[in-house]
Length: 271
Image 1 (cartoon, helix red, strand yellow):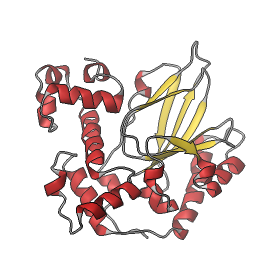
Image 2 (cartoon, one colour):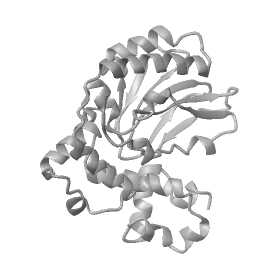
Image 3 (cartoon, rainbow, N blue to C red):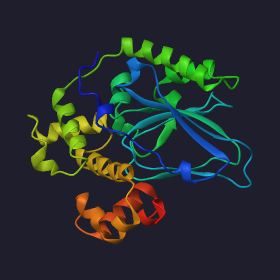
C-alpha cells in the first residue's frame, strides 16, 4: 500500500465547462469505493438526454490528472488522456454517452507503471497503454449498465489492480507535491521545493509520475485554485484576483487562463 499524503485532502480538480454548455447534456461525478479514494478522484458520466441540434464541442480544462474514458455504446474503443498543459476540445457529435475514470496526480503511473510523460498533451488508445484494462472495459461495460453497476464493476476491478500494484513511495516527490498543493501553486520552484533531492532528479520524478515539470504542475494547480474560488465580477474588474494568485500583471493572468481554459476569465465566470 502507498504510504503518502492523501492528495484528495489537498486537491480538488474541477472540470467546469460542461455545466455551462447545454441543457440537454448532463455531467455527473460519482465516488469510487472508500479504499480507492486516495487514488481515483472520481468516476464520471457525460451524456446527452436527447439528440442535440448540432455537434457538441466538449472542452476539457487543464487539471493535472490522467483520465480513462470510453463511449458506453462502444466500449471496445477506450482511451487514456494524459496530463495536459492547455485546454483540449473534442467534437462528440449530437448524441453520446461517455464514462470516465479520473486518477489523482501520480496515481495512474503508480498503478500501471506507465511513464506519464509518454501520455502528456494527447490521448491514446488504452489498449496500447494498459491492454488488460482495455480488455476489461470491452468485456464488461456493455449493455448500457446503470451508474451503480458501473461503480460496482470498476470498484471490484481497481481494488484487485491495487492489490497487485508496486508503488514507489518516494517521500521526496510527495513532499514536493504537497508543498505545491498547500501553496495553491504560488511558490518559487527553485527555492521552495527543498525536499532533499536534486533539481534534475526532481524533474525526472515529476515527468514520470505527473507528466511534466514541477513548474508546469504548479501553474495548473494555481489555475485550478482560481476555478474553485469562483471570483466575482468585482474582483476581476479591480484586478485583485491575479495579484492574489501570484501573477505579475493582468495580461499574464489572462494569457495563462486562456491557455488552460480556452476562454477569458470574464467569459468563464460569466462576468
